[in-house]
Structures are given as structure tokens and as C-alpha cells.
Length: 342
Ligand code: TRP
Image 1: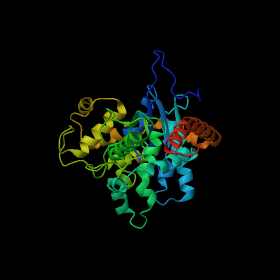
Image 2 (image 1 turned 60 degrees about the vertical axis):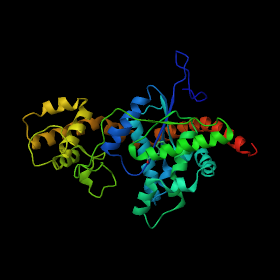
Image 3 (image 1 turned 90 degrees about the horizontal axis):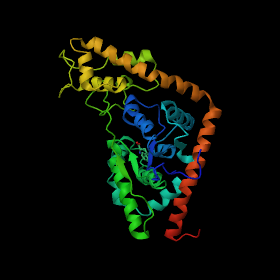
Image 4 (image 1 turned 180 degrees about the vertical axis):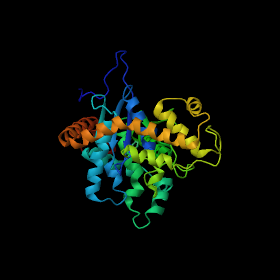
């Protein structure tokens, strides 16, 4: 395994591009996180030098139960490994283990106008939800995210639609800093995957599936037991028609077809054909069973990995070491450029 050279040359002599993404360790991940993000991350590690970060520092912007946060952080790391992130191909690590993230965040904070942070829709949304705790970290959240990305010279950042504005801010920050100090940062591009569309709530299929939904029947946690998964799909909201086709206005059916196609590797058209002439009851059951079956191997892996704390520790230590080696170089450059004594 290479620790010194984060961008080994490909046989053609070109360097692989660098990809960085992060996920917050708050609770378990949903089927939406899995199909929309994690599955892609696994694919991407084949073609890129990938860093995948459990962003525990970001989670502190919302009040956390310390014991739970610690548990969730390890669980998130175990999940990354269980879905197929391979530490021999990419670098999985825990954000707080690599001190350069908080350090670069501070410097970037001094290069981001207050007004720009105030315009972030996530800040406004979260401030509304957590009106009793609108802290400076919540406001600075995008600066830490920019630090995550810019430390590693990431070329590409896979993010969902809700994080595009933050990525735009990272780009602006990199450009602004470079304009003052010369070419220090790579300006990252969003990576838009050609994957399944959004996975929607099973109860309100016009809304995105979310683990913060107050109704647990609306989302599938990727660690839900097979029986629970099937049960939740059985109670999924559809419509008052009978036809299983993908059509505007049939949000519930569309969502189930999308999910079925994603987990079976079929096209939507093939999925429609598979259910031609069937009733909604059979359809929902079949989708539930397909999802449960699809998640089973990953769940088994997860249980094994999460139980093996020594292995997890080894992985996060190694990840932190490799991430630090790379990010320190950027940090030194930045400190030098801004005039600190290095
Ligand atoms: N803010 C991201 C989210 O909530 C998580 C994140 C933190 C991230 N740092 C990142 C994503 C860097 C991509 C790159 O989804």
C-alpha cells in the first residue's frame, strides 16, 4: 500500500484524478444514501484516488449525545467498509483524526465573506429547525467542508443536490484564495452521477427519503431487518389506480419502480414489464423482498466489521495517517502563503 504517494501514476503515466466525499455520522444511513451516494463511492474508487471521510466535526453543529456520536462514527466507518469501500483502493478516515481540517477551516474562514455564508440555504433551514442553538459552527459549516475538499486537491466531489451550494462556495473560496496567493488550491468540480434518481419517502413520495423524518415507516435504514424492510414497503403509499407504470403524477409507484430497478440492476422499462398485470400488493411485496435481499450481504459484512473493533481501529489509524501526510503538504503551503512562520 502506498502511503507516501497519494496519486500513483497509472500505467499510461497519467495521474489518477482525486475524488473526495464526506458523510455525517448521524444515525444510520437510508436506502436513499446508499443508492444515491455510497454505491457510487464504491464504483468511483476503481478509477480515482478516493478519500472518503466520516465528518464527525460537522456533526457537532447540531447538539449530539457524546456516547451516541462516538458509536455512530464507528458505525459509519464500518458501513463504508461493509458496502465495499476498500482501504487498499481508497482512504476511509475520520475527520477529527486529521488536525489539518480544523486548521485550514480557520484560514478559509478569514477568506469567506460573512454575507456569503449567511446566504446558504442549509444554514437558514437548520437555523429554523434548531432555533435554540444557532451556533457559529452551523454558520461556518461550509468553510469546514471547503477545507475538507481543498486540503486534498480534490478534482471531483460527489455530492447530492442539497450540497451543491456548499460546493459552489468551496469553489469560490479556492478561486478567491488563489487570486490573492497564486495557485494553491485545485478548484473542485461537482461529480454528478448518472445513477438512479432521488429515492423518495415511502409515505410521502413527493418528499426525499430522509432519516430525520418523524415517521420511521417513510424511510428504509440500510440496517433494517429484512422483515422490517418488507413491512415498510407493504405500507408504502401508492395511488388509487391499478397500473404499475412509470408516469408523471404516480410518485409512489415511480419511486418503487426506481428502487426496484436500482437494486435488481434492471431498467425502469424492464421493471414495468416484470409487473405487468400484477396488483399493487404483489408489487410492493416484491420490491420489499428485492431490497431486503440486496442489502443482506452488506448487513452481514457490517455486523462482522462493527464487532471487530481492533480491525476498525487499524483502518481508521491508517486512514488518518495517510490523509494527514497528504493534507499537511497543502497546509504548509497555505501557512507559508498567508505569512505564518513555518
Ligand atoms: N455536508 C455534507 C453533507 O451533509 C457532508 C460533507 C462534509 C461533505 N464535508 C464534505 C461532502 C466534503 C462532500 C465533500 O452531505
